[in-house]
Image (cartoon, rainbow, N blue to C red):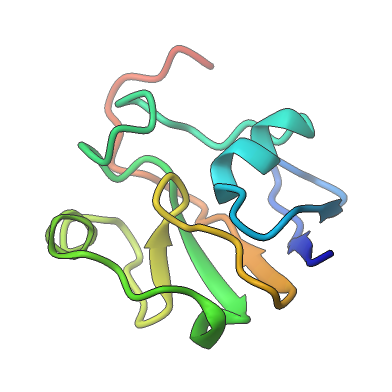
Length: 112
C-alpha cells in the first residue's frame, strides 16, 4: 500500500502528513479525505490549475500526463518539471512525496 507524504504547507497542512492510499486512488481524493484541503475550483474536472502540486519523489512511477493537463499546467504558478494537477494523478505502487505550492492563480477562493 503506497504512502503519500505531504510536505508541510503553512495553510493547508502545517505539520505535513503521511497518508495511506491504494493504487488507483486519485491524489486529491486521498488528500481531501484526510482533511488536507487542496483547492479545486473546477471541482476536479481538469479545467483549472488550483490543485497544482509538485511531486518531489515518485514522479517517475506515475502515468504520463495528458495534453489537456499539460496545457493547463503551463498556466500554473511556480511550474516545475515535476508539476501535476492532483485531480489527474492516479496513485501507482510507489510512495509519493508531494509539495503543495505556496500560491495558486485562483483569484476567488471560497476558503478565505
